[in-house]
Image (cartoon, rainbow, N blue to C red; front, side, top):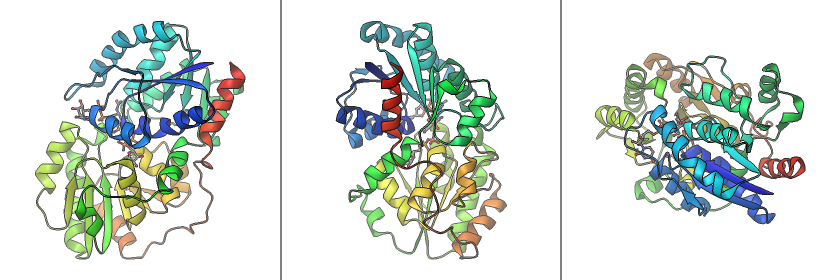
Amino acid sequence: MRILTVFGTRPEAIKMAPIIRAARAAKLEMQVCVTAQHRDMLDQMLRVFDIAPARDLNLMQENQTPLQFAARVFESLPPVLHKIRPDWLLVQGDTTTAFSAAFVAFQEKIRVGHVEAGLRTGDKHHPFPEEMNRRLISSLADLNFAPTPRAAANLRAEGISDSRILVTGNTVVDALNHILSAPVSYSDPRLEKLSGKILLVTAHRRENFGAPLEQICAAIRTLAQKFPELSVVLPVHPNPSVRAAVTAQLANRPRILLTDPLSYPEFVHLMKRAALILSDSGGVQEESPTVHTPVLVMRDVTERPEAIESGWAQLVGTSKDEIVSNASAWLSGQKAAPPANTLNPFGDGHAAEKILRALSVSN
Ligand code: UD1
Ligand code: UDP
């Protein structure tokens, strides 16, 4: 059985890495092709997980639109598939890379396995364009690896037969366990020296560009003023729309540290050290029940309701006042985190092996 995995962004690399590692351990033939949708953040993760792609399409361009990027994948990926002729093409999540690669594989009559299938908000504009990407991948995929029973139920409700669905857990738990088992060294000494409470922040969603991102930045300024013992750390996403807004509103302010994107070990260990996380990220919501740090989700809807039900995540939207009042409640101890021994809704850390076993059985 020959498996080809195609990915291109930071979260895909993190969540595909455990599958590549497990395939190596089981001596399965798995090749990696990267689109490099995220040239810099992808390379950062390839180094962390020691992954050497067989093919690198190198397709990122400054300030690309999803459509422009998809067009480049449609053009560049078919020759790779003609050459490798995999039995399975594996994609992860809901990015433009994942959707376009799945669509190309379908056109080339290659079976598609979808890792992290079945997440839904039910609103095709939130998150945009990811909700449509993942719905389209589900209808193309031959095997859907659902991280949770609820994700599997979402797929069944769309008419996908049980024989094409397997609940595996999310591979992000596998990745986290691997990274947490080793000590970390920080590239920026200021991260080592942080004292007091840490508020860790990430923001990058397209639907938050403009006014919502301005509200988020205003909330961070207010929180830094209100809590004198607080250090805010914000690794800035390299998307130019994010970088410009965040730098304009938060650079050179006391106790607000803007950094480049952090390596996964640095970020994970900071999540663990943080008193609170503010984020609009998908992956960070899934990580909070493993690192045992609460996250306020700066979105109107989430496709990860399991994180909310676990008690580790709270949906707060993007208005400055809502963010400040909810963050203040957590930081001042009015809200308490759930007990650390609650069941992790995103799996037991063995998703990768389950996915590989299912591919072998179906081959
Ligand atoms: C993409 C995904 C989103 C995912 C996010 C994770 C789509 C439609 N969006 O959004 O689902 O949550 O990644 O971070 O697939 N850039 C760099 N270096 C990098 C990465 C990005 O310079 O390493 C800049 C480039 O100018 C690039 C821009 O950011 O054109 C946007 O990158 P892109 O992958 O298209 O969109 P994201 O907003 O990162
Ligand atoms: N992450 C990281 N370094 C950072 C910020 C985030 O390694 O500076 C990790 C984070 O732990 C999570 C993933 O990147 O696993 C989330 O990526 P992102 O928020 O870009 O994408 P999303 O999950 O929203 O698609």
